[in-house]
Amino acid sequence: MSELDTFRQETRSWLAENCPPGARGPGEIHTGSTKIRFQPDTQLWMERMAARGWTVPTWPREYGGGDLSPDQARVLFEEMAAIGARAPLVNMGTRMLGPTLLEYGTEEQKQRHLTLIAQGGAAWCQGYSEPGAGSDLAGLRTRAEDKGDYFQINGQKTWTSGAQYADWMFCLVRTDPDAPKHNGISFLLLPMDQAGVTVKPISLISGSSPFCETFLDDAIAEKRDLVGKLNEGWTVGKRLLQHERSGQGGLGASAARTRPVGVTIDLDLEEVGRQYLGTREGRIAEPALRDEVVRWKMNSAAFRLTQKRAGEQARDGRTPAETTSVFKLYGSTLSRDRQEITAKLMGTQGYGWEGDSFTEDELGAARSWLASKAVTIYGGTNEVQANIIAKRVLGLPD
Image (cartoon, rainbow, N blue to C red; front, side, top):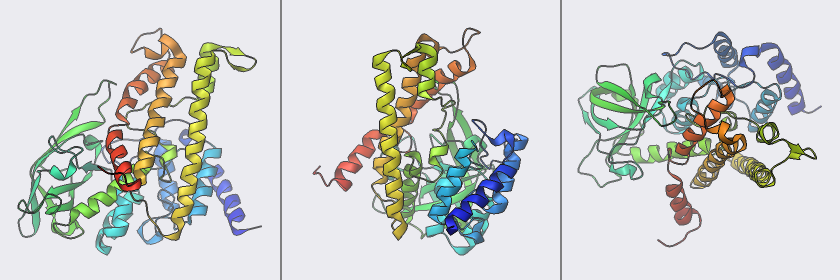
């Protein structure tokens, strides 16, 4: 028996014994936020996995990770999926900031922040977009002034996902207003619980408010929380975006086990089709919608194989680059299309907002259909990703 087979057996046994019933199947996933009271099984599952380093299984052990190889991590995720175990911890710290700090952070920053992230002790939000700097991110105007022991920050961030529940923010700020556009930008970490930070949720058509406006009025970031060099934060910020888009596109290790912001339900398309349209010879009765389901499943399967191939190619030490835009573009489109097809299969029952005539799944499908419209916008719009692919991947002229 190979070492990987032995690891699989041990992992299967441990998961069966330690994954609580309330952490299996669809449901709540721990975000690390100290502002949310999680269900007992959600909390217990996160704590047990954190004790093994499996909240961030491929991170080094000295920073709270499991030090697993890519093959071992794949086995872990497969065995979790086999019993319906949810991810124990998912947030911007595990998916975005953590991998960036592993590359650019100081040893002190890694020890202080990565360990806390791995233990589920802090949730993070992203301070990138501003009212005048969305797709043109380098046009940001939020200023940070050097005050000796700290930076004093003034400005506004928008579309700050989860800011109302975040404990910390990583953000891009302008530290040299006279420098060229992509220079003079620094990457800072700052606590959200301070007088200089005000958060206002933005209500969306889906009825949820995952996005926020964040106002920074003399907010404070310590000097030790400058990541990378002063005025050279654009490099760090771009690297983090690659991790973000990898995760949103499904390339990241835990991406396939999470859903886009605001999407509340994820039903099996074939089961929905059979339930609402009936069957003919064991297949969904409506040919046109049946074809849509088949095409989506084929595209999804091809995408998973492409993810697997990309992951295998990355094992030689290469890290995601512009090709992450391919995954973001295609993965977000698949997520949006799935919710669109779900609503179609349900017919008028898939577009209900409230009332006793709709089931919980039907109401969830309607909200997910509305929320999924944002999937192709946040984290870099599909149009921006297409431009990046055209210029930097395919080498097409402007």
